[in-house]
Image (spheres, rainbow, N blue to C red):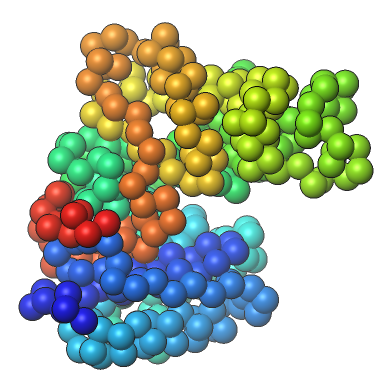
Length: 338
Ligand SMILES: [Zn+2]
């Protein structure tokens, strides 16, 4: 491995509801040298998952010569208690009060840090991704839910009780669609992958004509956000309507973020962001219509540089910040090797 440097490596771990990803991230910042992935389930109980993670870390350690790995950063879905390293609850894995940080540390023999997965993804984009060089970066991940993180002056903004940055649960509709969080009208209830699919299926059930109709008539659960995006890109009128409406709803949320934080960059990742300009163009237009001009004038709304590995990179970056301090944005010579 020619990229082994004096600073060594940090193992970044991203625990998703579907997949575990582990990568070796260079200490000074950069894309992972290697990433391994495994299903989180079946056998998603905490002890089994920890054993799997540690096996993945060891496999990667062998790849970098077994030396120079200084610790583990773990990104997990919240809510969690960073100070004690405990995952309080993960609805989609059914975990409760799992001392994940210490389990990984004792089984791997490496120091470990635990943080929220969406914070990790936002931190990665600030550190070496689409938000590098900016002092105020907001990251959104559009997936099964909508995760978010706010990075101000190189620090994740966490709020008074670690609950800040939940951009998916910004209300965009008074009395709107019910959300999994218990509230109504959250942007996640409209613009997450499953919410986009549900809105499209509902419109078709009400009689909208679309190339999406046939799978829906056969089985409405077969419609996916990806199918909506693909049909829109292929020119389907109704799918375009659904995607444009989704973009406008996201634009409302972004206008709120822009007026509150006046960021230089909003970085959007996750599967839905793959729709590209069909999503970003109407989204930017809606945000510009609604937010203060002096704020929109300085705000770039861009796709994430690391849609798949941001969680891994950011978890490693947060380990570095927590244990060694001094994470600086954009220092990586590595951006050239992306
Ligand atoms: Zn919500």
